[in-house]
Amino acid sequence: MNKPRLLLAALSLIASPAIAGDLDLRIVDSAGRPVSDAVVTVRPAGGIPAGPIRFPWGTTMVQQNIAFAPHVLIVPVGATVKFPNKDKVRHHVYSFSKPAKFEIKLFGQDESRSYTFTSAGAVALGCNIHDSMSGFIKVVDTPFATKSNAAGQARINGLATGTAQVTVWHPLLKGKDNEMLINLPISGSGTVSKSVPLALRASK
Image (cartoon, rainbow, N blue to C red):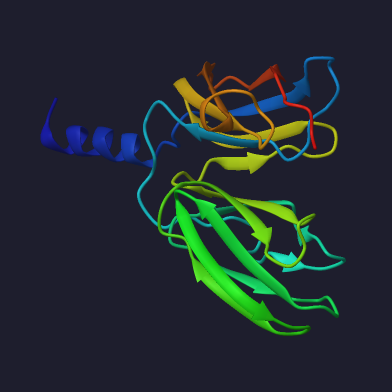
């Protein structure tokens, strides 16, 4: 093959779209009931693509109605999370979790504070004033992340073909770090669908 033909062949390979598949999980408990707020992260066979990680949702954890909203928030490593207070009472946000130990002292209605998360992992939040308040920030180092909805559905698109490492995290999941790891084959021919049962602790 001459040089022009070799060049054309190389260019055609570059221009060809990478083969990718989709993952559609249904997260359920041991009784088959849907589980919401389970965080699914994937490390595809080809590894994590270079570049900044961005998600379509924001990086804000609101205090409203004496609760954290959303209850579970996924952010990339390096994200700065805002903590606006929409309640008429003051809040005092803190975490003792290994990935991020911090304290945001008393701040009142319509005030906001922020914190930058530099390590991957699950961060449990509390309020030093209101013991009933709890929330979680899952800091991830992969762009392939989502959480299950009220129907237990969690879908991630555009995964490279091959065996992917899929991690499922939930604050009540029994096991080390509240996680379970499964390996799933991703095919470029369509969507991989799977039901994933979780062994959960009873909520307090």
